[in-house]
Length: 384
Image (tube, rainbow, N blue to C red; front, side, top):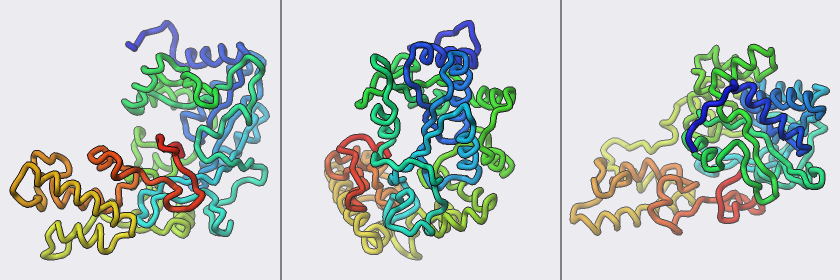
């Protein structure tokens, strides 16, 4: 779908999109993360709802427990706003923790821990739900639309953030998606906004926002890397995590007590997530030691499968041993013991790097694998 210029700025276009949905009587719930994009969506919906006589704006937020200071304070201020019907939801869902070799998940407000061990407590009036996946937060059972109307979830997706998001919007041919399995449609009113548009709208209208952004900016995080999300989701966030250790030391100590692996990563960086070769050790010996002999059982099992696959694949086109450090050109990305050790050191639990090379052999590890009763993705895409 090619881009098309319209005779309207992005702010007015976003308001107009929401006015149409409100005026048609659909039920609209803003999915709120306390980030700048979802915060702007709340304010855009406030304008549209007031213009169509549909206040208060319904908002739903799933508590993630561990977020930068300022995040939940912003949510609490919004919850007190009379124009907002705020639904604070607690699901106890698993969240990815890429820094932990023993288990790549932690559970929000873990019921197997004492509440004193949590980083913080949810508000007393929060709603606890059974559904662990994010699509289960805004569903007709919880937010029933009127007869003949549709439940819409408003999300702050913007196409400038990634090529994948742009392609997803183009494939749906507009800012509204088709209904999901629950009959809920997504609405993306600010899909065509840029970072500057978001901050201009906040500044010009005097809107409230998450103060964590100010702290991150003062600590040297560039504008295009200002993100509000659980700090354990990807290794890309290591720099931001190191910043957080300096910016919020008391909060950081609580996080380290809750997730011990975080401290080492914040202190030593990405080196803690990579194999270290001993003096005089070959990469093959390093792989055996770090990915099998000294690794958690689940990593060792996956490393053995990966080792056998890649070494045997190499042997089919070469009489030379599997290379130590320089990748075999025909083996491509995983064509040496060094590459194999670097990838399998953390186990590749979601099969992002090795799964495509051996379909059916190294499947993504679901929460159920690490904790009985924690749930699965039912063979589909991770939705936690």
